Amino acid sequence: MKRSDLVQAIKSKKSFLCVGLDTDIDKIPTILKKDTNPILSFNKAVIEATQDLCVAYKPNLAFYESYGSKGLHALEETMNHIPQNIFTIADAKRGDIGNTAEKYAQAYFQQMGFDSVTVAPYMGSDSILPFTKHENKWVILLALTSNKGSQDFQMLKLESGDMLFEEVMQASKNWASPDQLMFVVGATHPEKIGAIRKIAPDNFFLVPGVGAQGGDLEGIASYGLNKDIGLLINSSRGIIYAGSDKPNFQDHIRSAALELQSKMEEILIKRGLV
Image (cartoon, rainbow, N blue to C red; front, side):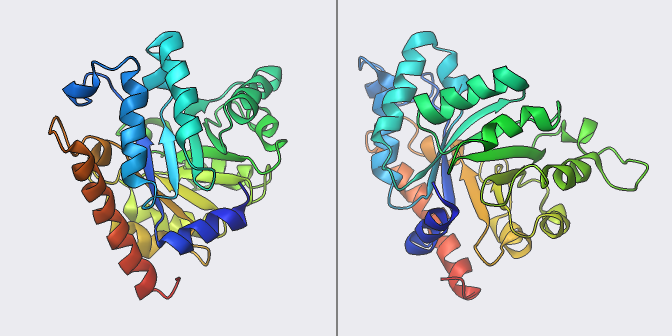
């Protein structure tokens, strides 16, 4: 997907919501567990309930790989049910080099048809560049993540005075343009998003951690929005399991997504971005 198409979708839907498809068979409604392909059945229900409210879906590959070939088949079928005008993210967090990285790129971009993939930058530029060779495909680089362990390495202070994640962001901007490169910036670090936006004024940020992890949407938007909106706010558990085991679980899923989308619409209108 081109950047212009993503921006247009955001403005048209007045939403920068990304729904995380972290589908766990143990947590889906009991009624669906009897289906031949329960993961797919649940994902289809989530997509039907949210596709007009979100601009992106983000399957976390661990939730599919853990079920072996059945899980991967469910993922492929899920991709077939996502509308073409919705941005797709393979949350794979790959980070290998050379031919291996290229094979990962082929797997997610060519075979599965994803628009983007999350990539860990620890091995440097040659773990990233193979993904940038694919036209209208995106690398989403792990910069400052929302987990507690992000302090272990990402926030280490270097001799330059910068933190390690800041150095990674500065370097990686030379590897791809803002039309191909996004950064993962965790919602649990809203106080840092303003400074991070100065490092990467034109790049999109994928922001996990809103909802179940307690991220503040208003604070993130106030620091992170740019002229093209520049944010994809992900919510996974807070949306897809909002219906728990209720018979009308789809209605609850939609309500949870609508609550976030409505707040996003208010923010965009207030800032004159739509």
